[in-house]
Structures are given as structure tokens and as C-alpha cells.
Length: 227
Image (tube, rainbow, N blue to C red; front, side):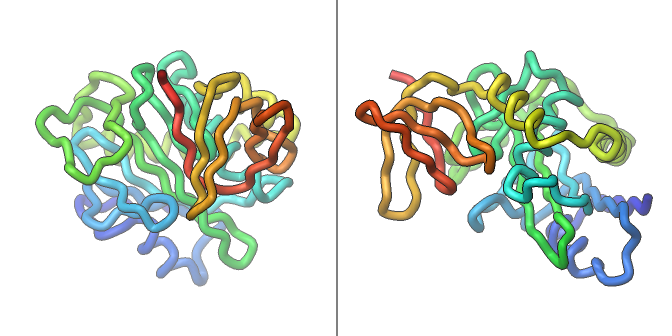
């Protein structure tokens, strides 16, 4: 495995993609701070102190569209599934339902390039005005300089050693979904769907119960209706 760690970088995802040609099968890029971290749907992922930022190469899941869901499950298994839960399609939420992690996946030449951002510990006084979902933390830990490098490596190794079959991905994802059986809204451009989240289907699609009908939603941003 090749692992490059930086104190500061614009984006671990961009760096890995730019250096993809000729790279080994297992390639990890991590950084203590990234200035232009990227999230899903071209959103910005803010970099806080005590947060991990890393990107890596991995073979896609047997069902391609389950890849991000599989990575999310493996992340919470590494962390602690009692502390962190899942929100469709690929967010990690803390126990107070604030976002503490996100996943970005790009498929290039049959290889999944996975970007991960995790708010590992407290970052008091660093709220960002553009942080739309509420910032959560996985723990109250304060990372030392070594852990910004060693934790991403340990997580990547855990993922490589614990790949999952599609049926197990679906079962485990539903078991760790924080909004299973709850009222949600899914927005995708000008489209809006409201209903009860019933779980994910065989391709990772959201199954929404609306007016006694089940709708399958393949993309969008989900809002948990807390009222």
C-alpha cells in the first residue's frame, strides 16, 4: 500500500486523481488540513481541527451503486455504530443528528476513488456560516499530530480487509439508518418527495412510502423531518 500524508493540501481527492496513472492498487492520500475539500454534488466540505481528511482507491462493490453505502457501513463499524449512524445516501450523523462525516465517490477507469471527511473530535469556535447541516463530532477526542496520519491508514486497512456482499450491505445499512421508519423529505433539483423512509433497495435506492404507495428514489438530498 502506498500512503502519502500532507500537513496541508488543497484536496486529497484532487491529488489522488491527478496522480492516479501508474499508481498501485492500494493508494491512500491523507492530510491534516485541506483548503478546498470537496463534498457530494459539488458541495464544499469544511476542514476543522480534529477532523480527518483522506482519499483512497478501492474496487467498487459487486453492485456498483452500493459502493458508497458499503464504505459508510465500514466506517461506522470502525468507529462505533452506537456513536454514529447513517443518513441516506452517504452521510454519517452523530447521536444528536448532526453531520460528522461524509463520503464522495468518483468512478475512474473502473476504480472507485473515495474521499472521506470525518469530524473526529471537538472543534470549539470553528462553526462555518456555510455549514448547512449542523456540525457534529464523533467524540470529544483531541487528535495528536501522528493520528492525522495513522487513523486514515488504519481505517483504509480495515475497509480493505472487510469488504461486504451486496445482501449484507443492504441489511447492515438499514440496521444503522437513523431515519428508518421516519418522515423524510428528499429534494432533487425541483423535485420533492415526502413520505416514510422504508429502507434501501437492491441498488441502494431510497424506498419511500407515500399515500400507500412505495416510491424508489435514486438520487437527491434527504431531510429528516424532526417535528
